[in-house]
Length: 273
Length: 273
Image (cartoon, rainbow over all chains, first blue to last red; front, top):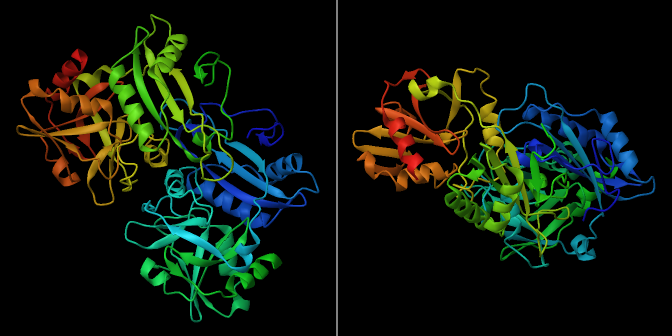
């Protein structure tokens, strides 16, 4: 767990988080998880832009890109391929929800090993559990990767079976929203639907990159409401995030999907970006 | 802010929170705010019982009462009257929502000054703003005082006017739920309604004590759905929490309430408990 030099707090090693930090007290902050390849953050402009937007959505002033890039350079060796997690909180405050008139946002940069995905995730696809835990509708926080993640924690407690790659999360109206750690796309002929995230869910940057750079797929990409009963009728379903890119889904609950090549094509798109 | 000896982490002074703590990473924990009177926690059995129940609701094993009482005794002088905040998190974990098979819950006990309430809060009552920020429905977390409090943070940002004591929060269906820092009761003849909290909100111990010990009020107490349009027709409205007990509400938005004696009676009830 906490090893020497596995994290930086506000640019310093061997610091820790104050119990007065509002990230700890209220989950009052946002985060990013990104892949470091040979010491360089992959898709940095997209990650930083999203970090700034998520901070702004809850009125936190995001630290400068220079500061964060300098943190990453301190923490990761130039040859290192690993995972960086960046957490920005509103900083310290006194007891009570009211934020101080002047706050000093906290930045934590944490290093961890890149997960090793089984080869079959690439060749055969992955299996999703349909979670009982629902994502609630909160338009003011929808799309933001904030630190209030108890729903994901509860959803992730629903399985302890290594055959399950991730859990599919629905909203209270049985709309498909996302997985606990990634977004989702479903192919219906020449249309690729990704769930609308205006009420809940996290709008990941890999989802956005697929939307932006889908031209070579020759599909119309449509963020839209997508019910579970529609999803299981898709020809192909893929899940995506910043660490693994995209995986085909082979099974959702008891619904089996035939092998396809959508995930492979999307991984190729993402590699070029 | 962080002064020497204003907090204990896992029973030790001068410790801090690891960035791997799941309370910091995900808001994966619960808390209590209570009043210390002459070094003693007020209504301790109720607070501890609620802490255990809230921990259990998200599968955290709550530290023993002995440990917490010992922390409080270390942190507060026998003559001290102040506020204690107790935070329990699931403890440290690696990156990802899955909790380790064995976790060691973290406990933080934090001291702060008792707020000084204006005398007019007791005599004339307090004013509430009707918040735009809604509480979302999440039955799995309803009632629990957990660390995912961004909705309260956003609601509290809606005013910066000292005349406003607290913000009234509704759910997405215009039901009254609570205030950002307290629960609510509304009197209609011989019935006292407190909002039903099965979908959202925090079920505070002061609310529960009022429900349990209301006999001297000669009212029927009913947790029930309560719309904003019903609330503003109440004869008397009170807000309550563990620090101030109960205050009469004199104004909600533009709706004015005549002075009454319900809050005073409830403060007397609570003092005896």
